[in-house]
Amino acid sequence: MAYEEKYRTIELPHNVIMESRKKVSVSGVDDVESFDENEIVMSTTQGVLVVHGKDLRIEKLSLDSGDVVMEGEIDRLEYEDDVKPSGSLFSRLFK
Image (tube, rainbow, N blue to C red; front, top):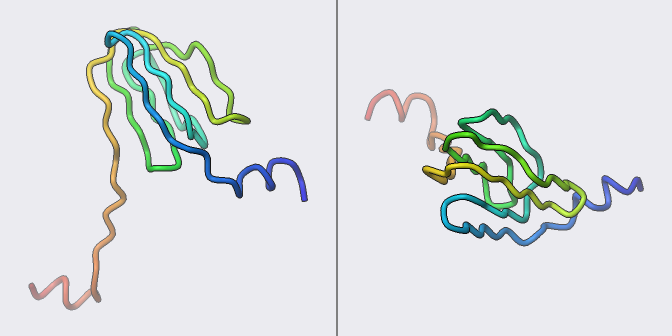
């Protein structure tokens, strides 16, 4: 079994620490999906986390340990929920 496959089977603890709305440390990160100066989107063990702000930059990125540290003017942290419709197509159409 390759190192990456073995490591991915262990769920990392997920923590978010914000310091003075200028710095955010996140653990339990599986992947950074996208980033620019206004938004950083990352997949964590607890769902997709989106950081909104201005002049955002990633100061530390270690996917081996699942840690990301970012700095900038942080306006909002938001989790995106994957809401899947329940029931059959017909039950959803005829509500």
